[in-house]
Length: 169
Image (cartoon, rainbow, N blue to C red; front, side, top):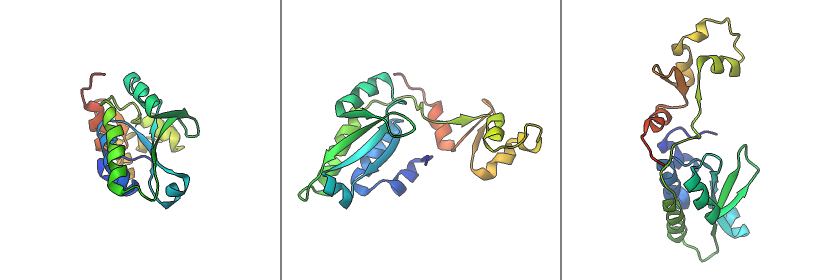
């Protein structure tokens, strides 16, 4: 599941971790998963998992201090755990998660995919000789955003705009 806008973050992230995940979004850090619910209370921690492979070198070092690099996703990941007990308030958990999210530096969003018409046709199993699919308008109903300068499609205009940000790492 790709989150394509900042607004979508709140649809998938539980309240105690929402502010931290929004901070990560704003810093162009891809969150793979997060959880803060009663099942997490049983295991003793809530967590946010970030895409390790897409992190800048500086952010990789920060992530390594906050959690362990692990496999199990389509990419390497770091699960940042937050201790949880019956006594942990939602605001305490939120403050702890926000504090760790603030450690990261804003980075280039290496995780944002883009596609050429040829790549979309191939992924959609449309024959190369289908000229109707060569028109960018053909792909608009699927929700793609098209940049005529690069001749690439993005999953959203917000993804495209993140790619335009001038960020020094």
